Amino acid sequence: MSISLHTYIASIVSQITQSRADADHTAAQIAKIYAQDELLKTFSTPRFRTPEIELTIPIAIDGLVPKPAQSYEPVNKQKFNQKTYQLLKESAANQPFNRGVSIKLQSMIAAESSALVTNLQAGMSKNQALNRYGESAAKNLAAVAKDNGIKTRPLVVEQLVAKLGKHVQEPVKPINLVDTSVVVEAAKLREINPQNMIQIKIKLNEEGMEWHSNVDANGDERARLLPE
Image 1 (cartoon, helix red, strand yellow):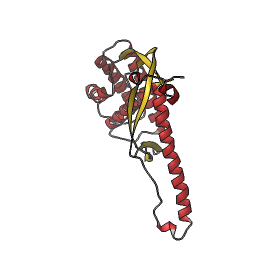
Image 2: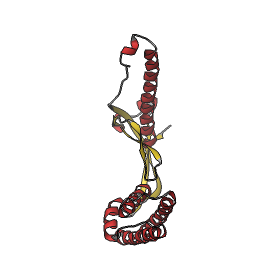
Image 3: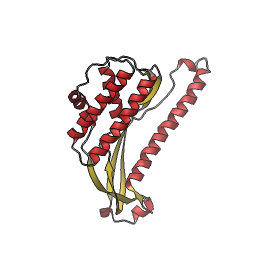
């Protein structure tokens, strides 16, 4: 029985990650035991990390299976929309937006960024699509500011476009991918001529994640999971 190469590598990484989680769980249990003992609670809790793991794995290629063409979004909408919102707030001299204004602006930004992606995928140049987006963003901000008595500095479309440009990629043409099927079972590998086998090397570097909390412009506390 063969398995796709990406599934096989993903399973290895997943198992190593689970091993680290199991080790942390054990460390937490030991910490509880230490905390309840008058002498042990003065000791540091034993805990191990694996900053780097290197594996050499023998496999044999079983076949190449074509996969349907895939296309990729030219814009990471979440980051792009957040950056636009930040720039619009700066043009308002960072005056606090009430919840209604914030929701309205974010909704407009989401609609315009969707239109931006549509224009790019339809063949419009990056500069042209961004300029159209910038003009709409400036117009929307001016309308919302006027309706809510918010003073804003003139939003220069060229400056807005320049700051947002790095968050937009030219549309990528659909590409055809190939799924590599491999043999990994030891019993089957023994039956294969060593000359027909290959070895893959995997080096994994450990990096943990931590929860970080911050307060947004509306005073709401938000938690984000970030690399430690």
